[in-house]
Amino acid sequence: MKRYQELPIGGVIPGGATPQLVQTGGWRSGKKPVFNEKLCVNCLLCWVHCPEATIVVERSQMRGISYDHCKGCGICSQSCPTGAITMAIELHDDSHRPKSEVSEEVCV
Amino acid sequence: MRVATTHLTLMTGAEAAAHAMRQINPDVVPVYPITPQTPIIETFAQFVADSQCDSEIINVESEHSAMSAAVGASCAGARVITATSSQGLALMLEIVYIAASMRCPIVIAVGSRALSGPINIHCDHSDSMMARDAGCVQIFAENAQEAYDLMIMAQRLAEDRRVLVPVMVMQDGFTITHSAEPVALLPDQTVQEFIGEYEALYPLLDVDHPTTQGPFALPDYYFELKRQQVDALDAARGVWLELQKRFAEISGRRYEGFFEEYKLSDAEYALVILSSTAGTAKVVIDRLRRKGVKVGLLKPWLFRPFPAKEIAQALADKRAIAVLDRAISFGSWGPLYLEISAALGRYLQQKPALYNYIYGLGGRDTPPELIASVVTDMQSGLDPTVLRYLGLRE
Image 1 (cartoon, each protein chain N blue to C red):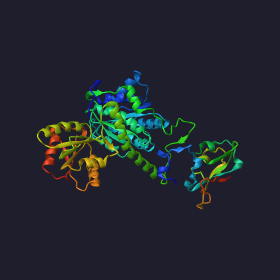
Image 2: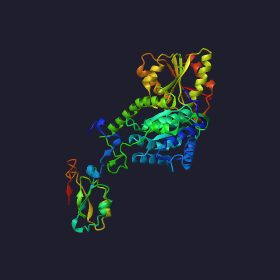
Image 3: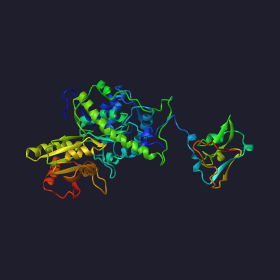
Image 4: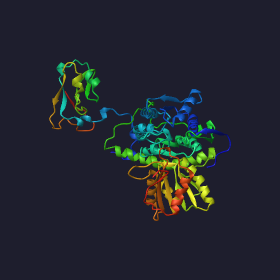
């Protein structure tokens, strides 16, 4: 952690910051989205609506959910027209909580 | 303060501030009108309409929006000025804190006015004192000339890389904003050379060097960012002293130190007063001096950062000191008194008797006789542990 003399003034983050740099998965409590690939039509509405960097997309294909970033808001399941994302009770076992600052854990 | 005798023009304090803005020619001026600030921006809008400067005026729907637009423009890399009073500053205040924390060098011209309620349009300092912990530099002008000079110095002070915080320049509502006095303006070119080009540290419009600004800062970073603001205000002291020297060279007008001393060095009794009432006090001091009463004045220009050590030194040998406050911290005493009391307590072993008078709330007139009565009170050795009120029916 940097001392105050070492930080850019005013909280500026040179180079820009995106949610990908921040492990917001630790905020999730109660429910988590679960992805069923068989029902997915790759409309990517979940990717459009997700406020974080949670929906993992490769070559325009929905690949899954990053629980390191998912806050459990449920917007993805609400926006999914085919029921491919449903909210499931999440046991409080911490197994899906961020483990490192840059982990890219994906659960499909 | 010596006023140059050449090119004196009759104008109000508001017009003087508007002329400073015209000469500074800021990129963006987001404003919302409010009495008694309105003539500042009214005059400035006329300058823009007449193509005497090319600032972008943004007419917003409230002062909250004015300061929000100011922050956005400042982060983009623009030189920004706005102006307000009273309720306007109160509405703005949420974003003033953000401007300070995001280190936006916005200049805010304030026509001091009482806060509601009851609603009142006249002068006191409750608006600027409300904002004293926001993280801005705060400078009080005594008259129209100072309002003009301090606006120009404020721009340069705000933008110094060692400072980079908003600077508020206060002039008393109506007493100064609406009263005409002779003012010596500097040539436009001289002002431009004094303030120089503004180059933002992290301009958002520099797309080749993207930055994220105003991010969340939780317990892991918030404290460090607040500590940086302490350094910024501390640095403003040194930058202010440098600027005064340069300003004296271009104008012949001297703002030596952090406060004006009027017949203070040999005085037994001292008055401490901000802004226009200090002018009245000088007249009272001249009269009392002719009667042999050794009384002087200390008039702070800077209230934030507060020059505590220098003020304590200047007041150390006085028999008694009276601080006149045009605002009150309910449940406590006057804000200026609290600063002076803390300064004397911190730096002096032997403390002079220190009195506090609340005066002029809501524009209540403070004639010379009332200020003279304060000196009489000090001479008679009244109890300094009692908060007193000037010109109140009680």
